[in-house]
Length: 354
Image 1: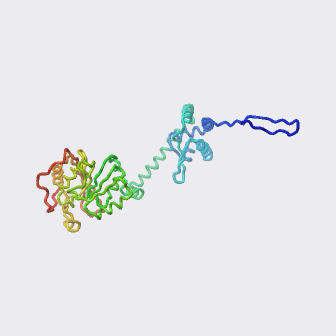
Image 2 (image 1 turned 180 degrees about the horizontal axis):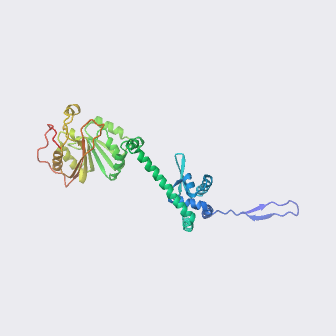
Image 3 (image 1 turned 120 degrees about the vertical axis):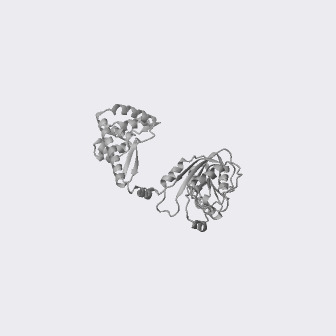
């Protein structure tokens, strides 16, 4: 494009012509400008090692806050550092995702200044800043040791630790929550696995479970008895029975059904009560069994087609009023057996010692 600059309008006037050249600035020139200062290079060296607040950077570089803030603004404007809010403070770090030109340039600059006296001194002061952070953290936990459980529960919830452990489940699993009740366990499991199938004999329980899980697309609820599960053979990777077996009149029939619907090598997770003497539970809550002893349950599971039994007594919650609990895991082996011996009688047996 040729631009015309108007001259005089008299006869002797002349028109001058000059090219209107618009040149784009290569990004590397902006990078060079940002790094053309020793203080900004020292800041980047520190922030490459550790994110810091402005006050911490002042300690590292031994410079006033106004100076550090001014150079940080330049680095942020040129895309070298990132900033995030942390309460009343801003935390700075070297920005991820620098373009290739910036990375190459920084490698050259870093190699040139990393062994300078200022850089070595800054590194020592940065280690002292990190050590001070660690000391503050240790002092906090030393003062909170007796209150930490309560504080963590207030901040994050009482069962955050156990909920996080569900991430150990394989995301490809299909899990059967057998005797699912109102769906509490099923909804906890659903985000971590491919599919959860909840089975319960109570229409009312299933109505509550479906309401609880209304926004979860990978949960299916089915009505059925544990002694005749409405599931296909070898369709589950994991089966859970949480405080349900003591309601079942024929435990061996139920456990054999669980083995049928588990794939070979699939796991059973069972939680129930240790043997107890609360006879009133039979009448008040419909319990068919007053807990389960180790030998009794091991025999039933072996007959049903399980091995690798592992039973652990759970710690007693001081606030709980019910009997002590245990958890048990078992592995489905081979093909589901055909039970030829007489099943456990409908008449509930009294608890036997563990």
